[in-house]
Length: 162
Image (cartoon, rainbow, N blue to C red; front, side):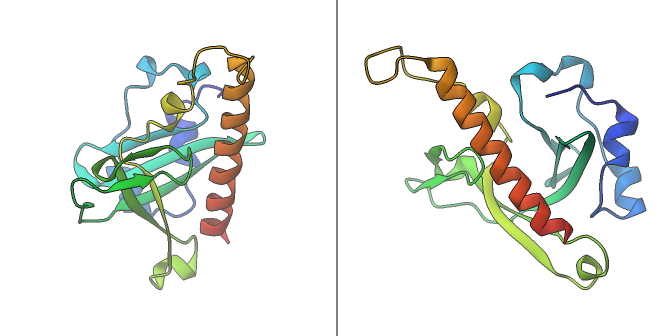
């Protein structure tokens, strides 16, 4: 992923009110390993149920506001992140809803999906089994997973923005 500036991040959101945009807390951008991620995702430290995802769609950054569900999956139940398709303990996957862009969002229309609660998808897709006869090229496995994650994120975002 190409690095983002604070101005690019704040200017990328289509489903956020001006008030929410002003209150948005950004992560420490200087700490991010941009080459090792497909998107920037973070939870707001001042509003724990609020999350954000920003990624490059072609040559422009696109950002969406997400709201985490208030309830967690029961302990002992497994869940799967829709973006990275990693099965995890249910408490590590959260239902996030995104208000649609424009009037539909103001009218209360939302789109939801299950995503890693900490937005750690980029790290999870890079955990590959050791090289073997069945998996001869770990880099190819990561590239395939990254392409799938990006495609699913793009599909979800298009649904939010229409």
